[in-house]
Length: 148
Image (cartoon, rainbow, N blue to C red):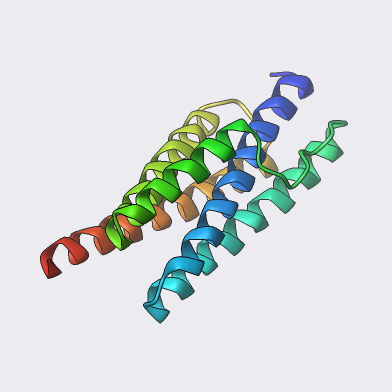
């Protein structure tokens, strides 16, 4: 796989992480539960860390890292999060879970590519983070549904 294709894949992941970090920030502001707000902000920061690390590698490979602004997908994601807000905490968590499933799938695809060792390790690290985010959201949604 050539550098140009790797840069494109990393740029796509970085943009997804940017979009999801915005969604987490927005969702955290809505949460009254301190523990839930803490975890959503933690996930937001982890996505921002992903962006920083991916951006470093993108530039190192001669590419231009994405700006830290939402793209069309990010605006759609924001819309889903806003709609989820209407349904309360459960709706917001469902929207975030949907976002995490989406990025998780894309990280999984990139894991299957032939990448230099350092990049492969980075993608694996980010994939583990995404798996933890997704597991947390699924457990929290199940807990919230039992509380109803």
